[in-house]
Image (tube, rainbow, N blue to C red):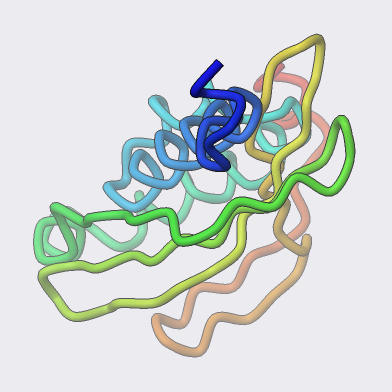
Length: 142
């Protein structure tokens, strides 16, 4: 009864926040395999494939300087029965701190990170250019 009275005791919001946190922590710490279990199939077949490619290019020294990263979920907004957004803040030892928004989708009763990236985007900070993912790689990831 007390739970129903308190605004912060929404079990759906707690589930969204939990997935957003686990996915964001995994990605912030370059643990793409860990992030995969919290991601939609679309995210696994796009964003996580590109993340794995980028990790091969940046090298261990870059990753070591950028970890361990910490994540704080700032807000959670459920916009429908199947869509939500979480704003998080990332802090790293290298000072690459930022806040961003993560979209989440509810699939088969489970909240999942739906973090899609554009298929082509230039990243001026580290010179990595993301290119379209070949269909053959997408099918292998399924």
